[in-house]
Length: 402
Image 1 (cartoon, rainbow, N blue to C red):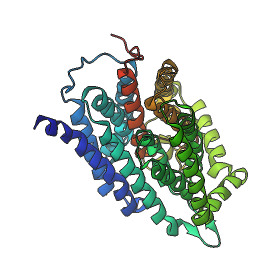
Image 2 (cartoon, helix red, strand yellow):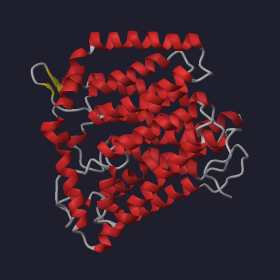
Image 3 (cartoon, helix red, strand yellow):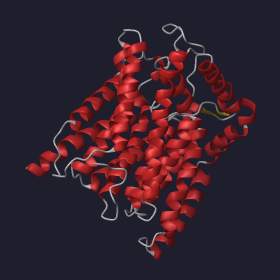
Image 4 (tube, one colour):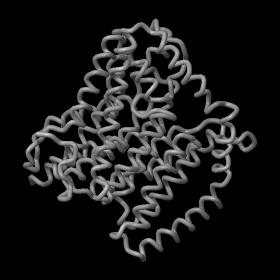
């Protein structure tokens, strides 16, 4: 009975998270008022569940220790929330703004605790990621007719591509399972047909650690390596045979970068940086508030109709030097975990490497937690991998201090 009860909170959470891509597919977000709609309600429910799990007592009996990374993230969440409340107008949207700004980080803290202190069977996470990847890959395929014209090609990139790449690192938990080749195929083809350039680049870069693990790790048998290579060849043939039109359309978007500067990113980046430099010192230190540069009806600091599409510049303008330095510190602490585990190259190490690469690419070329709350899947992977590495017998308590 007790064993069954301990699985209820994480299972409720995972089921709620699996509902998100389904709601996102059926709900027309463009015609929704911010703070309304079933997808927003679902995220609010997930946030409440995560907050509940964070206050649950430890089940594993492991004594909780102070962790510099989690402490830094807690400070970041509190700081972002405080600045958002300080500068945001008192409207019904403010609660949703707080959910949006803290959602992915609460996911990190929640899954770090579940993994390290709650003793959850790894198969639960593995099956979750497989169902998640399959669901998002199918929704990406179903979205094709809405985005691809037989004459004009790919007109609009599908943000499902970013959601898929955020879930990509969970594939490491499937590396020893029979469904692994299928999951890998779904990720790569799903990302390509979405046509999201940042997602395609992130997927390509993050595949390198996966290849290194499969082709060089001593724990992977030679027969499995050969099978892996054969399946890659077969998968490439199937992708080119049945999805070549959509893949060509995605490649054409790369060819147009010189013309559109990455959908205007060159201009956007320069504008955000210039606006920060001419801001008052107090705003350079503390920021202007969440998306203050893009809300002409509610912010006196608005100067454009689009977000920065870059975590660093968006945080710099919205939350100032304190915010961007804290964000940089979080990246630095995750990198320390990777460096300290160079000799402990298990699946969690490669999972963390993949996560770090995707996180870095997306934070520069698009955005993670600020614009796309599906990044919670990536933050889950980072938290899971770090907690597992810290619990490894070969690990000397990575970045922990008493």
